[in-house]
Length: 502
Image 1 (cartoon, rainbow, N blue to C red):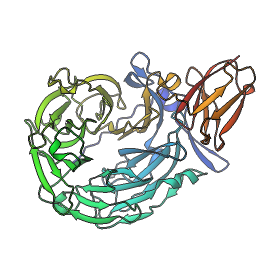
Image 2: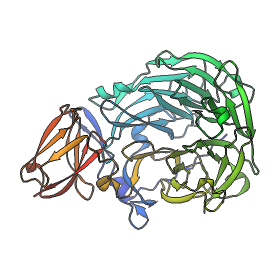
Image 3: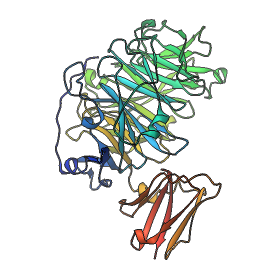
């Protein structure tokens, strides 16, 4: 669909002071000040509730200088995340109209822009990325013969002088443009949808060998699929457990397919709903009972407030609309993802909205979802237009959440108060002794796994010390590097311990 972009930019104090690109001895490093907490409803210039701003990386840093097809400045689109299992580091993979940017967000207060992979063909608003087996798979829409780019993410470990100009490790060329991609990691199958093949229906690609994707088949019977989630089904419908179930958002309806046998796809059912605008994107609850759907144009077409449709998929042959959540504003909902009992929605001009969905099965429009917090990346308004938060990735174990904003780039946010006091990630992998300490503190791994990085924060969240590339099971910390007080030590990007210096 056509997008009209209105560029309204607020040059606030926080925006000026917290973004800086420093070039020192030939090394370009992105830096920012410590996080801006959400106080009295604002984090700097950004409206918020219960979520603090860790840092922001602007579009001008992330994207290259090539304009998109409309001639306007580059913009942000999809986003996904990768955690390096070897180092414990966390990375944001942020899609731009003309490239894909890679940012080390392990230290959320001081993200490092590592480099970008330029578009394989033209530039346009839609670029989508997903991850499998330490590789990023990237597609783009209405850009000609782009194909699917494959990039080996482990190469990010070796970047010593960022930002780097990156190149794809492989290009899958059996498609040109595609709107979206989903990967079922259980089966190593990539589902490319909204492509120039199979009437926009899914292409099934074997990516078990990431750098050598293999076409398996395609499916055109249900027409264009805009977005999709595919699961190895463990939900309540016992007839289909163990099968590979495809739930497509197909513009005018939800389509449920059994895609276990790629040469013999079976349609299970479909469902639509009243006041349909554009059936855009949805996501299962973790028990695979309910499916939360966003319609991208119902607010625009019918003058309604942001609406989330909740479908009961207890019987896949007979899905039913269980309840409908409506917000207090008219912003357009875009991409939403479930983690545990929370739903994280990129709500365009209303920014990131976070909901408690522990009561999702109530069938009650007023109580099935409850908003528990938000971070608004578009402070000008919450009205109906295509600006603001395009997508969100909430799956880092650290608790950091990344948002890609159309006009303002990458935001790293976190639930208020958790950077310095989060106890959910404290575990017994490492020990610190003595504590309290008068002189030296020994950090020791119980199972001799390496300590890669150490970052130390004070109670205000200010980083006061960091050490990289340790690669040893033990590390001795000298009190002389800091004053007396209480500190939190972040080990390998996620494990947090408290230490007291006398």
